[in-house]
Image 1 (cartoon, rainbow over the protein chains, first blue to last red):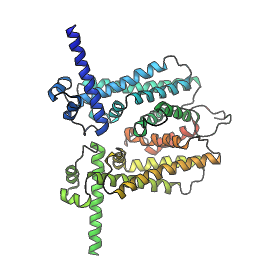
Image 2 (image 1 turned 90 degrees about the vertical axis):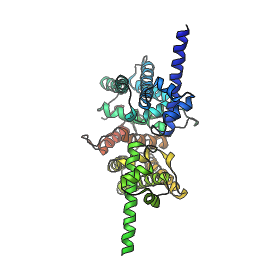
Image 3 (image 1 turned 90 degrees about the horizontal axis):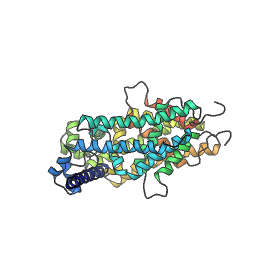
Image 4 (image 1 turned 45 degrees about the vertical axis):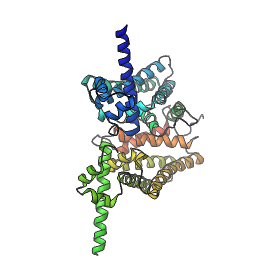
Length: 203
Length: 203
């Protein structure tokens, strides 16, 4: 029991370090936040922080893995019961926006790029695998929609990139104090991407 | 004549400082590149650099103004003879991609955000004015297309954001050594945005 509690306390500190580091990276950039800044923000000593992470790059990789695996799980569970191909795209986009809205600091930090990826090779591989799996999930969704005839998407790689660009760029302009939630914008984007700007004969 | 030459040399040094600073900011982030790094990269002393710019924030503002005013001029001149509303959107997107491709470091540096904006108020205002004018150019283009009936765009602000998101995010994944140019991707995006993913009766 005492051992379980010690393990829990260790995990809590670790989670706190990741959360505060994400905040500082999001605010000041990767180079702008030092290990000392992060330790001070958590309220632990530098050696205590190094007990959890070998360095800033390993800590950064942890943030990236947390975000990418979280987005992947979130998208998969949101899509579980959705059958309609166009609706699947909309649900994917909403889920992405929801994750961003609920995890803004970590999301922005993870977006700073893979330049800071470091630490154990295993962890770095996991980050890249999560990213690839997320992109593949979207491409498969688009490919299925194309094959069923519900959508017409000649290049799923470019179409997937267009979808992700619209969502990823939100981190640059979205203000949580506005009237609309991130998912509302994702919804509007989904409609525009599905219908296009050219008027449709029926509409 | 000697005075004109001295003025020219001064402008050349200034332009070189801006170019090398853009490169370092693009590679290392705003916090990651110091005035000393920039001076060393240009091959001038720190005092010589301070002769041109009062500080890093003023230098950064100069980069942002250069990029935004360059994009605005580029878009305006590209659109000058284009009348067809859908074609105007395509030309705007291509012009944006071309500017990005020809000025990658400065473009990426300017994208780091307005957090580093500093220096004279006049210059900061100019940066914001250029950004607003660029966004307005795109919105006007979309609004005109909507009013003419050529396109149907119910919310030009959101549509404009979708267009700019697709283009701005290029800086995060585009590799100049690939087969396709940035403008080719902009072209594919334009087609997708105009036609939408849902099949059209005629097509």
